[in-house]
Length: 443
Ligand code: UDX
Image 1 (cartoon, protein in one colour):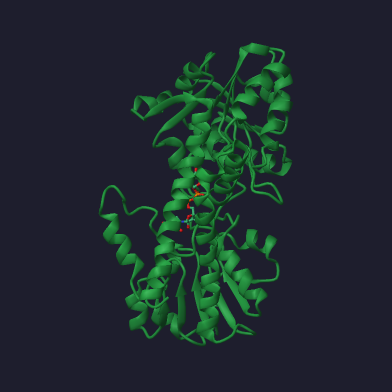
Image 2 (cartoon, rainbow, N blue to C red; image 1 turned 120 degrees about the horizontal axis):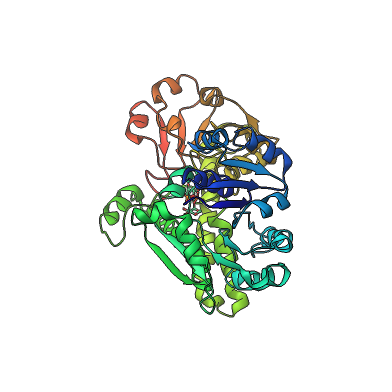
């Protein structure tokens, strides 16, 4: 059965969710306060890089099942189900999450809800938020207690957003146990196609659903920092962290995924989520329980510093030295530079006197907005020309496919730091490169 759905927020999460809901057969309206974004989306253009999303968006803008607006009244009039997919960034000057965009949706939408409605929050929020918002929306909505709010966290990864939206590992729905209302019934209709495929569907209380999301991201961040901490020990002993990860990863209880040592994690979720989680634990008086996340953050940030120190050691002082940084996005298949280790390393090298040339297949434009003083070029070979050091900082497949022999004839000195341990190291060494990985080969 087709539902009439509004999705608030048209960033990586909201835009993908809106297109995904249309693909499931629903009538969807995407809402955002940014008129430029809405104009572009209405023309079928995705304002950021996300594989497969442009095709899906165009398909449903053309089919008429998906449209966009800045007008909340239009959305309130049209829809019966309202998703909240706006951002919850880190507050400036603190660790906590800034939930003002989520609150603003409730404040603008709530007073327009004159008939029964279900609101499903997808944004990552501090535990306790859903309960507070559920009360608030009932207070401000003319429909009052006919407005139900559930929390339905999103686990999508950038680069795989379409797949993760249409084929999620699991669906989680937090409801008010005391008055569950129609939330589960409506969510089951919205996600009917997935539930038919036996996608696990877990109904929990509000607090659990909120904690599921931050716990999942805290676990992933911890796993990455674990292997990066081991990488530090490998560096001190000459051991090879990639071989080590392969060996421990064969244990099913551990698993090989997210044991990629390198420059560490970045992006719009993992870093800010572990900080917001600590801030919330402090408020709740259980700060000791999450004290380890401070170390997880610390290990993570040390990897960036390690790469800069290693660069300095290899070239013997950074002043005026030309360095090519391949990659600016926080991970491949994304143009997102939020808290990007790659860009952080590039920027720090520049501040310490190096002449840094950056190439990223998709993120140059975004990177230039926050680091306008770096040189950006459109071609990886151009970036490497006359470089005394090449740093691979994001594992785009284009970089993994570079021919080390060809590249050697372009650079000033064949020296490479493989910041993501993604290059075929032996081929580079055989081609005459001085190769340094992270946590391996005397990194
Ligand atoms: C993450 C979660 O994976 C997703 O479930 C959640 O909904 C949002 O946050 P995302 O931020 O898109 O998704 O990126 P992810 O693929 O998790 O990678 C995060 C960072 O960790 C990247 O910078 C990546 O390069 C790094 N990483 C990942 C490692 O350094 N090593 C690894 O082994 C894996």
